Image (cartoon, rainbow, N blue to C red; front, side, top):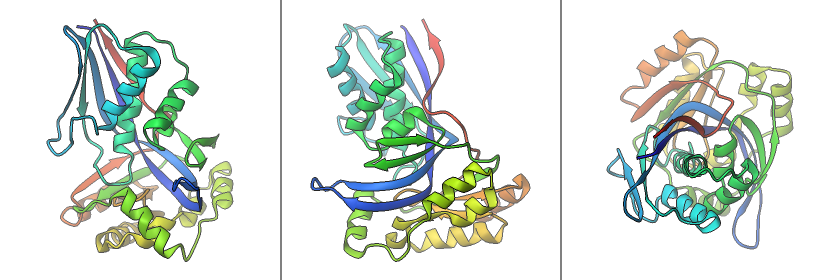
Length: 294
């Protein structure tokens, strides 16, 4: 049984602005995205028989045709042909759902990268990203990773200097937030404030972590309607975070720390307030092959 193992990193948004709505209902965004070390692990195997099978270590995650991993595999087969053997995809989830961390998109990215390697297709990154965009707006970023500015519906990318070394604490409340509902709320209310994305990019160019942390802003945080988000953010700032903010559509909050000791102290303080807490770091890659087994 031949198999491939792929790590699929989560992402955080260092800023998120909504710049308009298209006729098809999709939102134009302007966001700075960063890959982090927190990841899911996707193992794809060729098996005897026929069909596509999904398994996951989290019982709450559906393993049917609605799973992003299943959709990604189906799109891959539509483009490059279905293999003569069965394909099994096992997802070991660490990235929380409904958190704004692109967990489902990361899994889809892992599937596209993994199938490309397992089946020796040889598709380039641009082709994989094009397929990924048909699955979800965050999938292309999860394939490429690193530090990037995304515009349009999330498909127009520019590479940015790496986030300066820091410790990233991520905390997710028990309640999640539906991405679709978050955008519907935004459509009803709009934004009172907007991020200065150009300033944020300048801070990255100058390796100015403090300036970047102080300039982070997410317009969707205004419509989150979840008190735990602001409570977690307040704890992070009180513990010495240079900046703290909700990522994506939420409900996870991240804090940037220069001191690992302060980050670990904050992690302990967040137990009980958050359902899950992770101490991680920025990484410069997206979905990456760890191992190929024959």
